[in-house]
Image 1 (cartoon, rainbow, N blue to C red):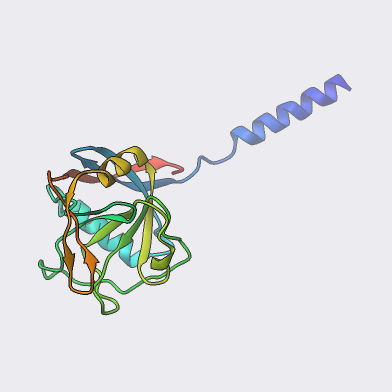
Image 2 (image 1 turned 30 degrees about the horizontal axis):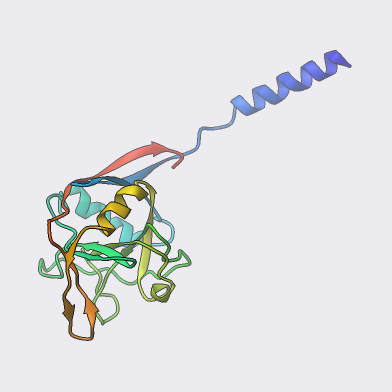
Length: 184
């Protein structure tokens, strides 16, 4: 009996060690003036959006950009407001919800107009589900997200009562990069 048990343990151990390592995945890292946030990207659910975002990160588009919009309990936002003339990405609505830490692609009132504008939810925002593409999720740095969401702002409201609260002191993305990590 002991011999049979020992053989079973050896077989189990060898089968566990023979398991392939989880696949490596690329994550997005945003080093900000208030700390670093790391995002898992939802490539299967939003492939065009993720490809566009990765291309922007690789070319350094977000480096030095501020989170120009910080609405407590809602979102932080960065990008260029469509002023760069960059190509747009078709909407890729999916089942990923707008929870705290969700990374989404902003667009104007017309469909399929997202490009460089990204936002991160500070709290669950279910009213955005099915209206904007969620393409990532914070996996490290929720404390940094909370710090950014709590900065003092100058309140501004645009046409249609859209909150565009601007930080009194800029919160910058010092460096955006992609990093390969095992099984993230």
